[in-house]
Length: 118
Image (cartoon, rainbow, N blue to C red):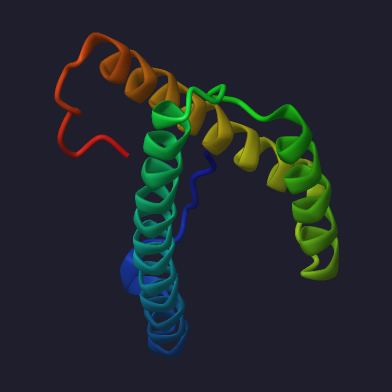
């Protein structure tokens, strides 16, 4: 993190206004990302229950590979670093698999599904 010798009072009001506008947009985008992730995890929960019911494995490496390749292409087209996009998707996939394993374990043990688990 860098520091500056410029005090907040020294900043041009137009610059502060533009900074506030951009930060408001960032905040809105962050909120949308969180809501989209919540919807995604609701769907993956349903996949986890379906897999557990039919004794399918929690992970699907072939699909994961296709999804990573697809996301890398989407990232490139959107001018986003594809390596970053892949890391992000790998993080999500790992979390989904962890939840699918837990759902499968709960199903085998006859336990009630844990509430609010993404």
